[in-house]
Image (cartoon, rainbow, N blue to C red; front, side, top):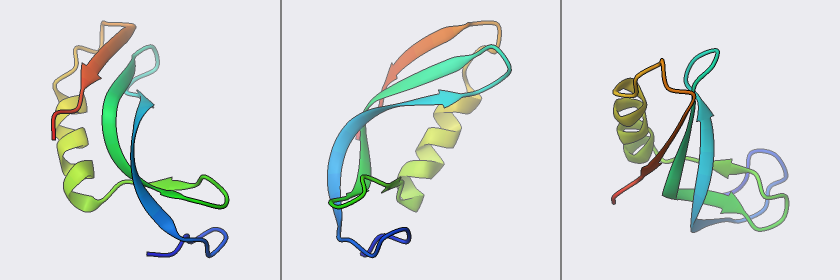
Length: 73
């Protein structure tokens, strides 16, 4: 797969990413598999990963300010 920003090669990596769920809630997903460009560091989530992320974020209590979750593959 090529990067939609610079045309570089996308490589699979595992990283930690923050997601803003509501005005005051941030969730950090640890060990998240993404595709990252080797040139510009742009990243994308594959559809199957994004579906699981949506489910995980949907279960977070929005009264919590910060939540750290491990993405289990």
